[in-house]
Amino acid sequence: MPSHVEQALLNIALNLSANLTSEQQYQHLVEGISQVFPCDAAALFILDEQGFLTPVAVKGVSTSVLGRRFFPSAHPRLLQIMQTKTPVRFDADCSLPDPFDGVMLTTQQTIDVHDCLGCSLYVEGQLVGVLTMDALTVGAFDDLDAVTVDTFAALTAATLRNIAQFKALKAQNRKHRSVTQTLIQQARTQQGEMVGLSPQIEKLKNSIATVAQSDFAVLIWGETGTGKELVAHNLHAQSHRADKPMIYVNCAALPEGLAESELFGHVKGAFTGANSHRSGKFELADGGTIFLDEIGELPLILQAKLLRVIQQGELQRVGSDQHLTVNVRIIAATNRQLDIEVEQGRFRADLYHRLNVFPIYVPPLREREGDIAVLSGYLLEKMRTQFNTPNLHVHPKALQVLENQTWQGNVRELEHSLTRAALHAIQNEQTTIQLHHFDDFVQNSDVKNTSAYFPSEGQPMRSLVEKYQKDLIAHALDHSNNTWSQAADFLQMDRGNLYRMGKKLGLK
Image 1 (tube, rainbow, N blue to C red):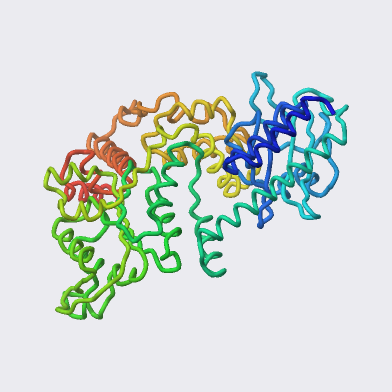
Image 2: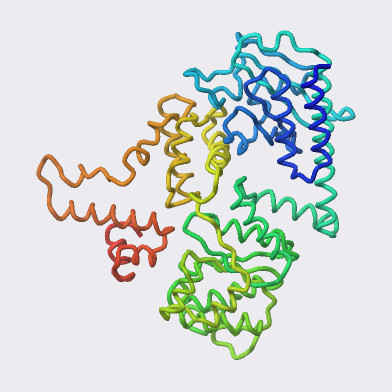
């Protein structure tokens, strides 16, 4: 056996006993395989319980792939590899589409894969994953030693199984719950998965894990579109209240005059229209969690009543003189800097300190190193299903431009931009999203097309002004999470006047 092969095997064996995360071990495996075999790209997939192949490590391929899941029936090469226990070769003239066409990292003008080699990974007769290698050179895999290929495939399969078993044991030790509660927790965690590999996201996940099991109040703050609600769901899913409800309240959308009733409930006859007793959000959340989104928008009078619930666990329904006791964990979120709001008298200092027991900062997308590619892959995976285009992907050059954007709207803006670009590509019957598909924001993101406001033929001044007002309000709402109070601040005008103007223009 050649010395470089022996060294690669030794390195893989040493990494198994090293204190590395599972993601690092997966990546070391792929790196070692890339050093031994004449490939330009390699990928390691894990087969999940739903039958999807999930990439866990790649080499020579855009990291956007790590945000995807591959259903074998939509990818005939992967399906053929899974159905064959011996290594499978696909020559350059193979007519089956390669799942990595268009996403390999290369300086060549043409980035289609030429030769492909795939191995199904079995442990004790059970399929656990797939290993693929791709080469731009025709015939790159013609003279491979079969024993070497089988050796690395067996070692890779065993490593996957060992990592999976180790992770399962750690999960059991952390939870200390019944089988039913554990399954519920895992299901909720999967539904609220946070996508990203950056140090900033790892720090965020660690903060969530640190405070989740306590009953401390948590204040989540960050810019619009960063995923504060997702953080709240993860906090609840990892808490000991996970089998109880988490009740969502958008404080910015509480109707005027009924906000107190929405939060604390009311009794029959408390006000006009109160035809029966009604439980408020806090009663519904008893034993579980209440998530107060946009807490900075809560009126001062309600802030005082909320403080009483937090301090004493007591509330009064509107129109009642009886006190009700509730056991609720408080999670709040805001895109405002509440310490400044306190200084300016718009937020109660005592409530701020009660909520700010454990603050969690959600970093904006522009601060998350390397996450745009992974997020793009994850978001595109949803679009592939939605638009029924299984081979849709972003060209590496376009992805590089995405990574250089500031993304003031953060993940939400990235998702909207990708959706628009995907629709442009599909409309042109293309599966590769090119840079020009993003011309709505890449080439001239800050300049709006004003031709509609300067018509070539005569139009009434009133209709032109109303069109501009309507577009301006829509723009303000888009940058304010569709919150009218924030849009009013953005336009520096009274919220009531903005609301009436929007209603007149057909935006309400």
